[in-house]
Amino acid sequence: AGQPGRGGAVREGAANDPEAAEKIARILLKRYGVVFKRLLEREGIALPWRVLLRIYHRLEARGEIRGGRFVAGISGEQFALPEAVGML
Image (cartoon, rainbow, N blue to C red; front, side):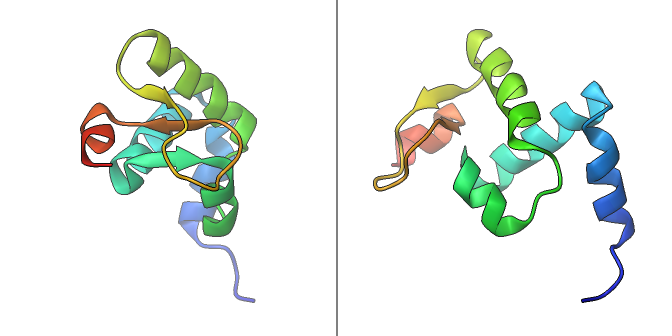
């Protein structure tokens, strides 16, 4: 395995930086439309799911995203952009 790149270091530091963590959470939503723990584990995102979960719950409470079950066969919480839900 190669050395971790700068992006990995940025993501790891984001767990302690709320603004950076929210930026990453939003980028993931824009990239995938629907975000869930198993997807992020497969992608190797260094930001812990528990950190993202707090952000996604806050965004859901503000009505910016939706929480629910969007992808069949996936257990656990899932979060989606409203426009992604309309395409499912």
